[in-house]
Image (cartoon, rainbow, N blue to C red; front, side, top):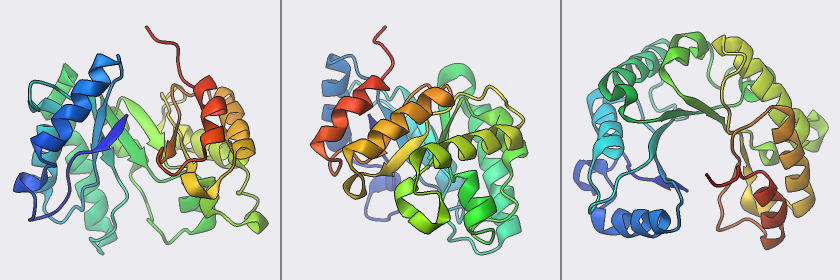
Length: 233
């Protein structure tokens, strides 16, 4: 399960989702032998606050429960200065890795390379792939093929996932980077697309799969998606 555990919001103490909301979810998931990753999308406007929220997710005690990993959703472009934004992406990645060390699994939720290099090169120029590569344990490209037009050729889950993952591995210099490509938007896809997506996961040797999000995904898609789930240990 991937839980949005923090927000850049003054309405939440420290920007964290309240313990009384998070703890029962963690408890019920762990009782079912499910792991839970807490994620947060830093805005890079207040680097210290961003780091504090990620550290709190990864190391905090949530009513006697702990998250099993933390993911950094690197998507926010509120900081208009691209060079400064990239510098802060690198700094946040370095500092988070330094603070957590081996105490937590750290995931990078990243934009798909097809979007950045082929669809819209102005979306996030010069993304610092190589610089952040040493600081993440798993890569989760947002391969939302549902956002692409049929005319682009990238409405095809296999092509979008395959090209995005291959290019990302090249840019990071990690040919065997563990990947969990996130699939399309739940209410904009059908079961047949999920079948293609699951086959694409095999092609890139993915370690996991998910659709954003489970509440809006058509019920029939659960069948093929379960094929992508690794066997329970």
